[in-house]
Length: 158
Image (tube, rainbow, N blue to C red; front, side, top):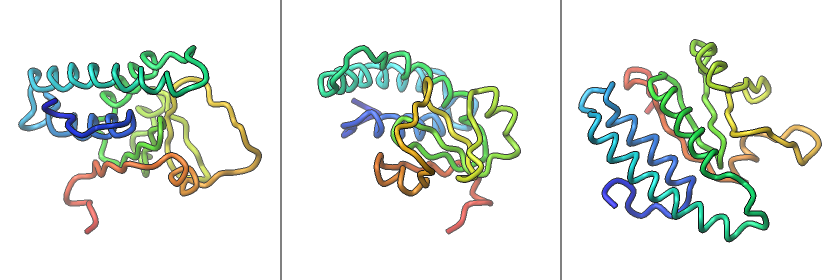
């Protein structure tokens, strides 16, 4: 593995994929089609391995991890250039303060969560297994969170 060394979960894989695309996407300075193709090929190989492991850990093997992965990659590629903070929590993608990108986000399949003040994307239909509102912090604690600051340096804090 050249780009995904030390990755042990699908969540880590997706986070690293997003970081790599930010850096090496052909539309970005210093990026190229060849490097992006290498990243995609390595990602797909590792995803295949990790999803097989995940399927053996699950009660049901009927879930289509490959379809979820294809949708995830497609969404990431469509929002890679937005100038907002992006957070990956479990299999969800959250975009913070993306008001100026609302039409793009809607077209890609994001929904606005007004109580959380973020845009969110999730593969497939979401089935709620709880009553009441769950805070974004509670979701982070349950599934883990990886933030990717995609704002330009002039807007980044700290």
